[in-house]
Image (cartoon, rainbow, N blue to C red; front, top):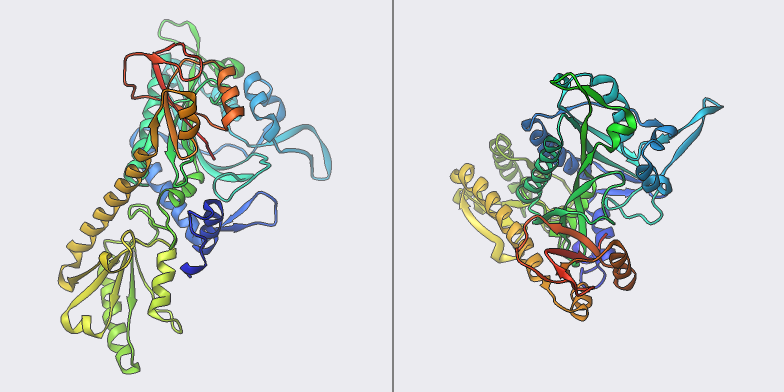
Length: 477
């Protein structure tokens, strides 16, 4: 299978599209710009869902569900919000064969409908904070689409919270950014840069937007999760008011935050290689695959009996698959599971049974170098240890790649060269208009102003003015 995958260095975009399809993650739907998420891809999304959902609940959030259809008038209540989303809206004007009295927008995001409901539910400071998340689909009418990265319909979670004070809402916004950072690093093995969005790049209607930015293997940035401090903008638009402890009426302070199926694309492009996917063990739908091997028919019974016993042993503590497919060679199976990114392969044949050992093959280290013979009796200890080693190894590999492709530059000429291969880290004191000119000239944007700043002062890369903040620029998906 692997020989039919376009090499990354030859055409990264083509490699990505091929791997998503060949690894059975997704396929194109008959509706332009939409995708069908296949079972293997959906199981990967379910793993992302489970790990994020656990973190949300650990921080006091609960799940709910809000309607797919939003009255068009709701979007007009917050001027910046409607302006930001207008080009992407899908609007329903006919229902049940009749013209609707008011057009309904298919959910592009839920700040407005949730704001309407919060206004009904919040009366007193005792009703706050409201900490609600929903798992849902959204529709944004995209002109140029790519599986998982940018599709007309996609899946995501969107958290929406309301608070009594400004500081509580800011703390919530940053807490959820930290949750996303923790998930990306520790589950997806993706090193991310948490930071603040520029005024040009922030969410429509937000006071401040925060992001986690990841570098893909072609040096481009992928915005992998966002958290927004909305101030009182939506509270005033939707009349979310409460009586405070002094019996005075106040507007609530709100936040929103989200991660989407784009995270699947991030995992693919951060870790994949020319043989296929490389999945972090903590997220992999299948962590271990057992491939039975025999050359003669009289060996089959013994090998399959041992393989089934091994499968029964392992399934209690790892996500394991026994590949008992007939009519294909072990080598074909190896390639198939390498394409699908399974972290660890167990090869089991007559000699292994005789010696009471197995061959373990790591996906992250191709060839003989990644193979180890281990005693069968020790697998309960060996396999978790090896999976933890693989998880740490691919995170380190991704971090090394990213760090090697972030350049600190001091001239605009150096800047232009740096963004052709990765990120440019620069002192920045430019305006929205300066950022727009840089985008026109180079196609690079401010990915974020990192939360971790070096301190001190420098000269802005574009204006030459004194700057107190460093920004990360890059070309993005």
